[in-house]
Length: 130
Image (cartoon, rainbow, N blue to C red; front, side, top):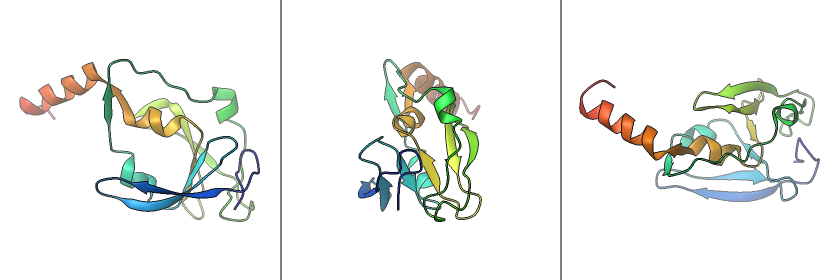
């Protein structure tokens, strides 16, 4: 399988989380990652509180470039959608095989959250507003 962005052959990489263990396909050239159906949903909810949230995602122009699905032999264009946790992250998903492409930095941007937001969520949960 080749990278939808730079056409480099993707390498297998293991994701090991306390609840999930699976293999993704990673591009050693551009740093993007291909998640097969339902794989991203297993880890995108993991939130890493951080004091200063710095996103290193590609530009909006770069994220809007058309890409073909590496899993469907480049016969299907990937659709674009804003990620619900971070509007600056544009995910690319295949309507056929349901795979998802994340460019370098997008997974980290989805999983990182400013400490103040995290504390606010905990407070809301404690007072029963969530």
